[in-house]
Image (cartoon, rainbow over all chains, first blue to last red; front, side):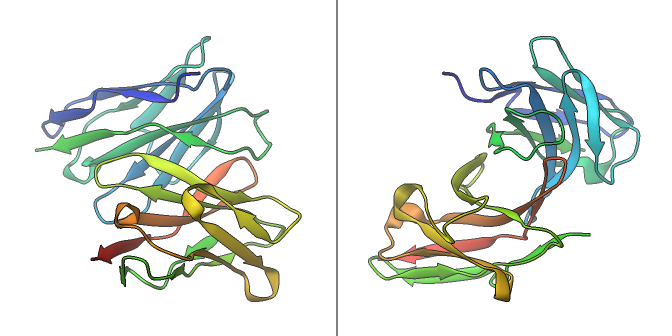
Length: 115
Length: 112
């Protein structure tokens, strides 16, 4: 059984650019959640996808968007990057039915630096 | 909004000593509670979870946590700390809808 994987590991972008981060769920999991972890803080919930539909969103602007694919892999897209978007982006997968509460398993994260 | 408070930002313990990391939560219904650990530059590893039942929960690496509803607490304990336990520890409450709310974290340093 493979765990949650994320790519790339590190990424450097400049202000105003766009970025796409990728996540492959743990085998058999149909729910993906994305979190942003700024330096020295706990992770903050961005949004969740269940069976290719957004299933909840945190307090993040619309320039943060996502996709989930039929194989349950996922992308996080951020447009018009700002300096404050520099953070570790974590993906977590779970075996859920959208509204249920199931354990989330995290990937290693993507470190995004915006210059 | 739900919240999690970890009052200790840093804790230093000697190797072999016991450890207790404090956590208080605010949640209206029966909480689903977790402890995750994060090594520097790494993702989050699940240590243990509480959904219901026995209030003393056993986890991996010799950790345990006790749920106390009357105190809204979910403290993490380990009887004997190893140098490899040095990391950041997060107490987490799950809201309905599978959203995780994290505490600010406690950084554990282990001195030899």
